[in-house]
Length: 209
Length: 257
Image 1 (cartoon, rainbow over the protein chains, first blue to last red):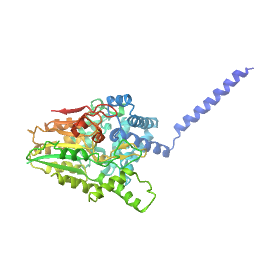
Image 2: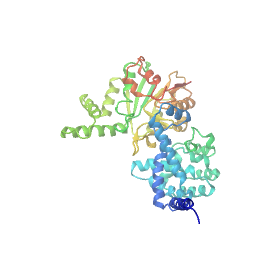
Image 3: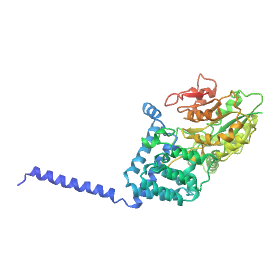
Image 4: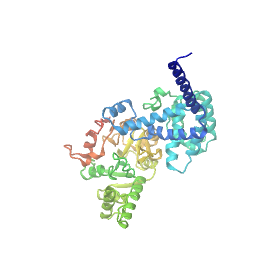
């Protein structure tokens, strides 16, 4: 015979396991639409790390924001962190596939907000997919993208250039890539960026926070 | 002839949800206007001053402010009209101008300044390249900025967070890209300082100095254009912007030479 107290403990453990299982099922069985929605919203948030007016671009600026309680700055910083952690919480391969789809669609959108916040935020998020297999997947899709999407990918500086597993594969591709380079020396600039590690990148990298 | 270029960025739309930015459309015009009127440019005898205005944000803002003003004339309840916008639009009409851009052109003309309107950031570089060799003595900027570059216009996301679209930006990294063709246009012997009035412009100024070998200055931290309208013991408006602390401390205005 087990006592009443022990019985109640067992019941609580049982329900605890049930709740835990439900929560993990929710994570595992996120459907494509859920992933798309989560990613799009996260892209809009991380966009602010590069193009936001109130984002603290350095640790020194962030500590000023804390010291003077600059709520706009602190809120923007938190928003970027939220976006990043949502992206990282999703199943990586599925999230990458969806990201590449979103980039293709959003970067040619007529809607200005989508064509900026979502498109550029999506491209910025490529930093979080850096395995050799993911790298191959990205380059294969980039080759198939419309030229105007490639123009955006390579005519703006992004941190994902710095953490490619096979940067030589990218450098080889850049020599033949169909891109309208925004100035004569841009292709070489991008090559140099692919050869630079994230630790040596210009500006403090938001992706490392 | 010597050429002194002032690039002027624009405001975002009036947003009641963002009290910190662009409640007035004139933020980036008034300092350079006062500088012209009070000779804070220290204009040299042979120097031609050019105002290179990024027009799209001024067009959008005028449309947004003035249409609602006109609408209010018809509607007695003044629906959704903020008095700041109405006052601004009315002032323009009282000056016999038909838009913000038209008013800026009037101001430029009355101060013997050459006006150039641009609709893309790349046209700023094109304009510099169109000038005579070794004729550019200095470049100033007035407008929004971030560490990434000069934000010639401002927008807001769905939760009213201020940002710029990349297509409205002169990026810090564009300096290196334009260096080869622009180098011959810059007067490397110029003792004048290129000044970039915007938040976090020190990196841009440093890059400018590095590329062209002339003195350049910018803010390490934020600056506040609103100090122009506030009492201060600093009479020189431009110096006031450089030195007055904002809500997050000193601007740390820095010159690279």
